[in-house]
Length: 176
Image 1 (tube, rainbow, N blue to C red):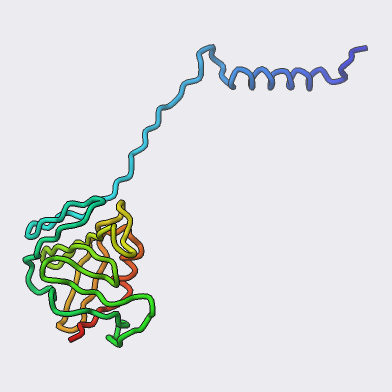
Image 2 (cartoon, rainbow, N blue to C red):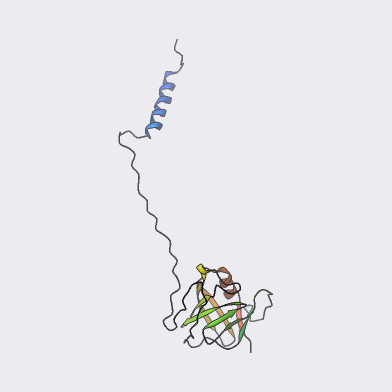
């Protein structure tokens, strides 16, 4: 008497093993591989405005250039954070922002340079100052609107979440 009671089951098991070993291929050629390509993702960096040159970005101190754009309230005192209705907020975390005529800014201790191109502003943090964005996120691009009292920013391209949150979460009221 045979050692195996069901020879058909034995044949099925052996065929499955052979198929697994040969890679389920009925031909003798090795299995083909399909080449895959990946497209690298790129982030579009803010472009330099044509009217005001950007300072050299890097780990050293920035040298700002006076912006030539009209309408932006530079050199006109500090702006304090407000809610969307224009009521001054005392968050205890965010101080005023000052935009100087020489192209420099002070954002509650963070210093840097800004440039203007029509309704766009490029902000570049000096990485050597308090709560500045990291070198890899040093530059941010925004659009701005100013109604004579309230200044607001809309993010276009900025990977520095702290700066982006600070600028876009409030409207900024000019202080005399």
